[in-house]
Length: 215
Image (cartoon, rainbow, N blue to C red; front, side, top):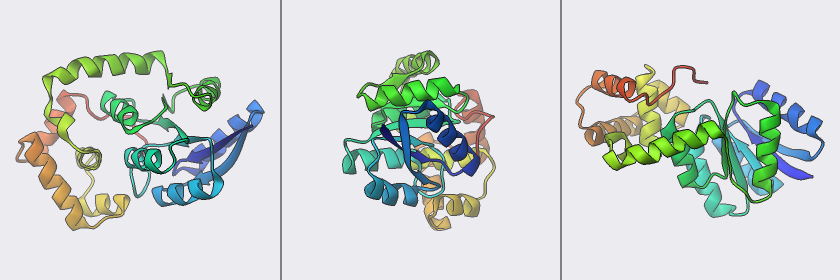
């Protein structure tokens, strides 16, 4: 039995995934986490072999968690399962150390196949994800400004584009509003933009953030 941990802030998603894995008959769900802090504590206690990880949870972002877990739990295989289908998230997830990447539009049998594959030490990439990876790697030669943002700056950028206030972003990321202001200042400097309107226009032009996201 493959020991699996599910990390997603939506209870319905966790319940659905648990049912899928239980029906498959070869997985044991050893823990469920609803935020970044729970991920770090439970993974130490339950020693899963594979983690199904959403990128957007309260507290630490999924990208930050991947980097932390790869350092602390190098044997853990991390399979991203998220609503983010944009190329920059896919690339960053693999650069951080993810073993596979799926969107939440994936069929149940693909989720089962992906977990089995990463548990065996392989990397899982669907044809659609592979295509976006190839396109992104080709485009990186242009050194677009958003490629220089840190993972946390990218998350603040995404939330600003979605119209969230600094206080709302601070609450979601479990940091102070002053810290969010600092991230905003840094990302605007890196993007060489002086207004949020310019940030929004850039994001729309470059298709940085999908419209059908899970907030």
